[in-house]
Image 1: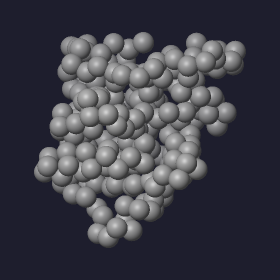
Image 2: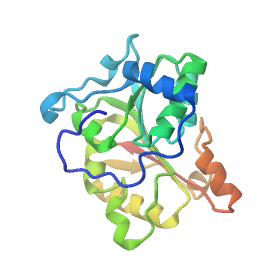
Image 3: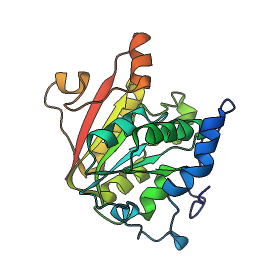
Image 4: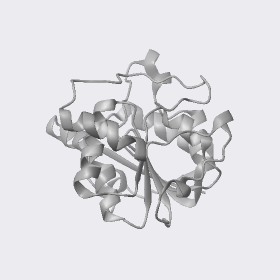
Length: 232
């Protein structure tokens, strides 16, 4: 596994689930080494994301915590001219994404199996065209709020790596997380919230691709919230 440049970031949550099927174990051994991102030594912000791909890409989009990879794989298939980076420490989710990549022969996805914040630190300024943070763990207990991905430091990192005019998409089914994210993103001064009416955050944005976490929330009767921000 790639190493973080330092210990400033601590990941919470599980890394492994049920034992993997033979085919997915094979993909971890054969396909993952071709797609896995290794951070440059010393933690310098000099990892060119576009240079990770064998074929030139027009722009690079980034997903934090891709789960089983259904959203990331669908985006990559719909936009073969773009490069996609997905971060996910849960090995079963990585294996599921590899199966999708293998089945669809997707060449425009790269994977980082650790903390997305460490990878953001390694990217140069204005190097990403869009970031997705879709249904992150809300860590609803107050004493666990520091475990949330959205924080003052991660918002500053996102502001640094997003191109001017690039968008950050965040979706959640937790009202507390929504308020937390809005507070951090608006107070940063680096982002404009693109909602003009309540409909803009109650309904998915154009070109939305559903995720299984969204479906689970809807089945449970929880309202989903869709936030779009633009880098100033």
